[in-house]
Image (cartoon, rainbow, N blue to C red; front, side, top):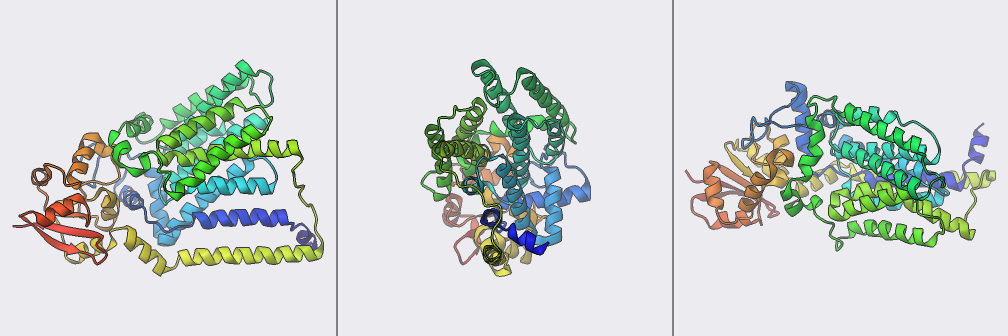
Length: 489
């Protein structure tokens, strides 16, 4: 039996394991996103005090209504943190990212080499989105929804009624459920166009099938209402995208900066897919066109949508590259069996690859690497100083640090954090102007009775406070990263 199994260890199977080992390594990262920490703290608060319906964490919005749309994911994150700390959070990200890409792999066309290339390109595109936040669950579930839709369209496998059940769960995990409706709506629109302009064409879903998709979508909307916040949950995505301050000031909501190398895989996938469609004589499917062009527009509009584009574009890219290669006869046929010697060599190669992957992961998970990275990107030193010196009162803090300070100093209410759906436009614009040291900054600190300021050392407000009367520099770290100013008594 062992020899038989070894004979099946072809280079294609080694390649498949290599691809997913690479994806897992790519997704294994140290949790340095500040929003991770307020989600963990919210999960802990929910377990201790019950569902959150009004803000308990800031003094600026305390008691105001808040739809905590990520409550289910927060419980998961808190559980992972309690069980395995930073390594658990890193695993959470890697497992969901790799699991999502596994569903994408099943949608892709071609042999293992083409699928592997498409998957690595797609993962490199989506990786800008991957971090230990509830959005990772949305990434994973979006790939499941797309897999079910593609199975129905291309393989005639009807598991559509799983979609409302997934939406029921998704609606209690994260407001990213809107991605699922974008995919469903895109397929419905594409198949309507397919029936109008290419009726009877290959893989075009019939009118009866389109009606079923619409019915599934309606049941999915109904399923979303089954959550602690009821109908209010449906409005969260619309309310979030309507916040102008996000688009104007928050990096992930801005259009991608193509001068940064992490956006280049997005360009490669976008242009590569267009090139593959042009190189193939295969007619562009209407659903592929709607989903690809729609999510490409979303990705160009806001960087946080690039991962949504990657989920859609990766199988489309592989589909048309495979068609172009087959038309030219440029296809490598997989080897079904190998000699015993070849199998042993493949086993050694596989062992080396897995050992290398584990070595990289171990280096990422080393306590020194984790501590160094978190002190570089998070206000760890500031939080330690505040705890050691029992600094309390009304704090004006950096937006970028609010989530971590909420977690590290739960007894010190924050001024602002990453919950933009709570703070809304007017407050955020007022905060941003003050943090930048704009006109009226002193009046805002006086009106809000701020006792101390925790801000970036090189920010506009820090520069103003260094020169202002009535404020004293209490703390400045060695890296010139953060400062604390206190109001003179």
